[in-house]
Length: 254
Image (cartoon, rainbow, N blue to C red):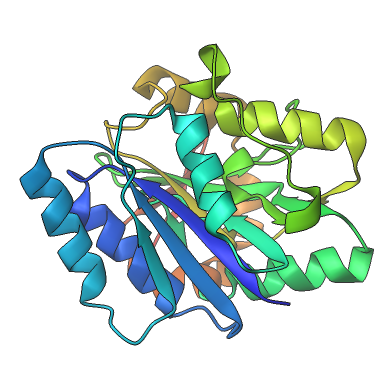
């Protein structure tokens, strides 16, 4: 199945955007494309961002430059509209994506004959502090991290383009509506596939991310029992020296 990975980025976040594109180029699933929607900003920054994407020449990457300001929901819908794949995959520009992410999510979705999948377990990386948490989203309304959605294109709802959900929480709003109508697989036990990065410029506040770490992180004891597997899974990210912690303290350091 061809998978269209969808990225909406701010022109001033060029370094993170490039890192996310590099992660896309390393995906083991070969039948894929990347749609990069560059939001409004200073023209010089937009030009620089477009030029940075152009350096990945020869790759199946499409750049979209909206001519006017749009809500985040509308920008995401624009990305979906450009997709040619039978599957669409959210590809946030500020997070870390394992080389097996698309392959593993797609295989799980097809095997379960589900309409979509989200990762129930993901790593949360508090970048400034150098701390990693294994977070489990099973008990949340979403059932998984909304930013990890991979969905059959024909079943993908539209993001809200107006109202509060169009500016923030648009991914959660869409996932809740999707779960109300379809079977969405909550893919567990592979947290290394996605590292959710908190860096101070996220759409959600630092307090929100601290709350996630406190409420969703698994314990130090569980981390120690899964140390070998977790070390191996996180190796592609080069997070040497990061502290892997539960809400009750440090389990080990990479």
